[in-house]
Length: 309
Image 1 (cartoon, helix red, strand yellow):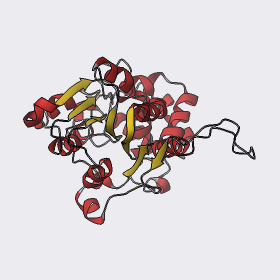
Image 2 (image 1 turned 30 degrees about the horizontal axis):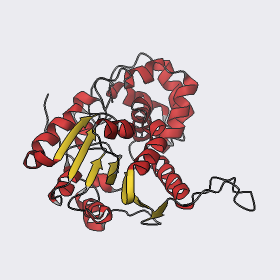
Image 3 (image 1 turned 90 degrees about the horizontal axis):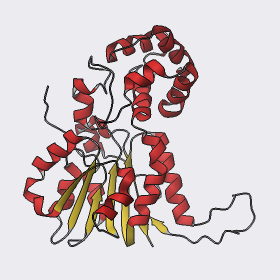
Image 4 (image 1 turned 180 degrees about the vertical axis):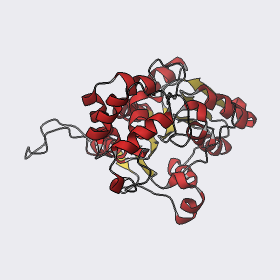
């Protein structure tokens, strides 16, 4: 089955304003997707360059078509954004003027039944953003121990029924499809709690997807590495979609802002660390009422930015 790779870019205007694009600058879109944000950056470049990174080959193919008119100033890279330093090194680039990370899952990935991301479509358990990766949702669901499942459901999905769901999953193995998993989750969540916080499978599917793609495991170092790659005055903008991601980004940004790595209980700084960045916004930017009404996937989006000193 083939589908058009659609992804309505979240907080588009806010991202463009935050990045403050220099016409001759070098920018990185670390989560290229369908190329929505990248098209905005490229439209403002004259003599500049954009590096578009994605681990999903379907995204790269679709973005290549969408951004055809800008082909002379865009470079596509099939990789994980966490490899930013080696990617730039391979391209002979020392510093960049700005970067954007949109940590959401694209509409294509969610809506394409073949990819197994959604509890709304019946499909083999997959959820791999990079189809070349070996570990899939099937492996997580069918080989992780009950304790491991409980941990990822609680940590990555903030699922209060994590222990019960993990037990039901283990008891029901083997589980082959999204609908089979869906039924197990619905059986595990008490009837009175099923309407709390949306669909009962939402948090479990999120947690499994994060585990499959190692999203949290790589995030902290990736944020630090992207910041290191900025020129003085360069800007890093990051859109998150759940509280765990947002806390990591917020904490890294705050550490870069203060520079001090000492224990907070110490009365004075002894590490000698100096501030490395300036927060562009202290509170995250969220979608406007107009965007919320037209793009349901913008509801949990939060944008934070930092500028390198």
